[in-house]
Image (cartoon, rainbow, N blue to C red; front, side):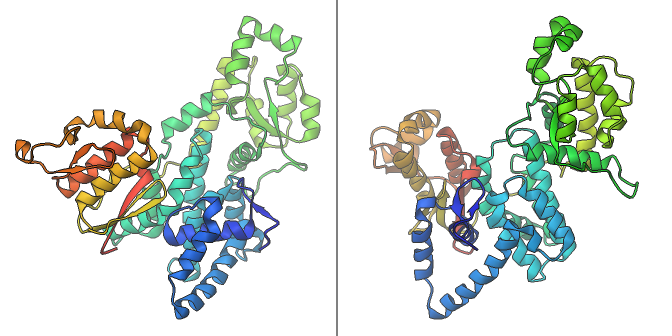
Length: 443
């Protein structure tokens, strides 16, 4: 592992990135880049001599896993290697804290090879669907460090559920696009971008799928490039063919999947801005089935209707390859036991008194410290829970706590009500339920 080599989009050296992801696995919190070594030092200081020696051995073991995540060619099993190579197309570094734990489960023989691969494929399904639907990637930075805890909670709820099944159920609850989202995005989302690795993988996989059951599939003999059927640069032939529709079709569908395919650079140059009938004839003779099968059909005009029909065809194939993991089911959230710690957007707030009242108080104080400009708006949305002046204890039977900004918050609630208040209050200042969690004394 070399510091001069960088990991993902972060620009961090491999050693620094490894320590960050290793810590996230241990603490379920992805610390800021500037605090990595200080956090690692603090983490090690808590260990006695014997535990420290064991930790060094642990670091070596997980460094070997990390090396395989970065360089799948170092993985001995061919099937695992293939899935990891595909996953790395989607800049998988955000998932490394989770994958380190998953790798350890496999190497410790707690799950077998098939279960490990099934988990990796579920992860690919999740990432590909989010990509095709244009879901924001910064959400993954918050989600992946703590997802193992959710998987364990799911398995504790149902002892008969397998690890791959538990992972699927958890992923479904993490902003997972359904089939309708996928269909609509394939029709309308502009997918073409400077880095074409992701869209190339999608199209190549669909092409391979078209040969399913044939004992093999055709690949390009050169590097894949994206070909726009309706060309990126307008020409007189295309403008004459589509007439008054040209500008609107160009604006709405140029970079959508229905208008994209794969060819070699040589073919890309040959096709260029040719008319549709010329392109259609060439593509019908192409080696890839995604081209030859489709463009051998009777298509006389490449207009909005034709692009949407191809988008529908590709949607069907996409969902066959990456079928829905299932429908989101809300599973019970634990509200029993003594809370010992609340985590909000990566900040850990200990609760010395270990009471639910402290959860509400510390939640409010976190907002005062970190989102003070939004406190007043949030307070107005939850007016019954707040008072500006010291309330009369006997006026409503509630008990009140004065906050550092002078406002009073009601604290006479059940555990469930405290959690509900925190969820609503944090949502009001722009934090989702995935941004915070509670740890319990018995955890």
